[in-house]
Image (cartoon, rainbow, N blue to C red; front, side):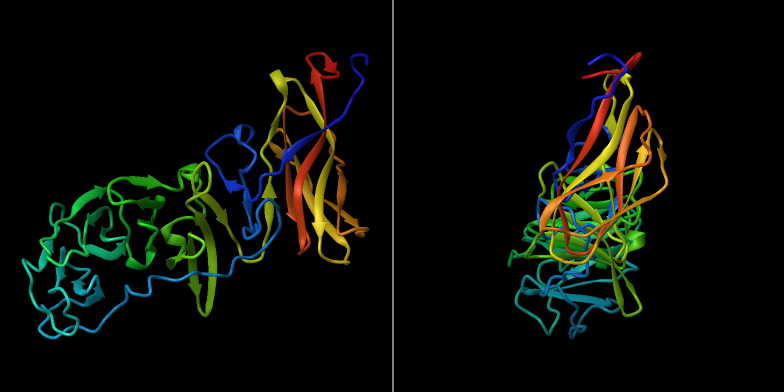
Length: 365
């Protein structure tokens, strides 16, 4: 084919779903399975893109709960827990963690020092949370860990693990031998020795994936997920779900009620040469006889074009829809965004019909 005559070829744009949020890498550098901007994606079914609100707020540890102030307890200690077969107490205006004798629930009896003073810096304890056989002791800007807190013999000590903390015990949770917590800098985890920044991929654009946006940090213990949500009156509004064990790091998924958006990674023209895209294909399954109504946008270089809409009647439960865009313009960078898809619509892969150009015009690549 002569130079200047276009030739389009279908190429894969996305097929690794659900895609984890990554905002601190240029969109054209992202891998399949990552997205620069998305919310409202379903994560229960793997390898498909679909919309779904997240309503399961998980739970907190059923055994780490408040207990009544025990008899003969030190005065002024208002927060009491019973765990590892002993009482634990602290107040949010102090720097000491108190512990009772092993095996005593109703009466506070001393064993060893029965008090751990954390006064290397002048801030107070904000919360305590168990994980594995350890206790995480939080201050606003620090994390201390008491290892082997299940030891019947006491003699406890705590090490400063990180200069990251949290402002409330309800924003901490233990899961699978690690402690997780939220603060203004994102979501963190620790195995008791090292600290891991789970939200590093979105560090400079956290959105609602931070302590100020949530009331509680819970866990789905069966599915190994961390869930941050806000309590608004009688409504639980999930803001984010983190899946720590995903390949390549923690998966980050955000939610905004029932709203949905999926944005692809950007396609970058080779060697700076221009590209054009005239169609986008969705390979799908659809568990409904209703009309398929899809809204989408394309991005030309740094500008999102006006939203477009396609409506088709499904012929089969599985098929392929080719979306024709009105914005067929030469670009150095190009991206695709779904802004609305129907319920029960499952996308297996997204393809682009793309044409590559040369320095002096379009040519076969």
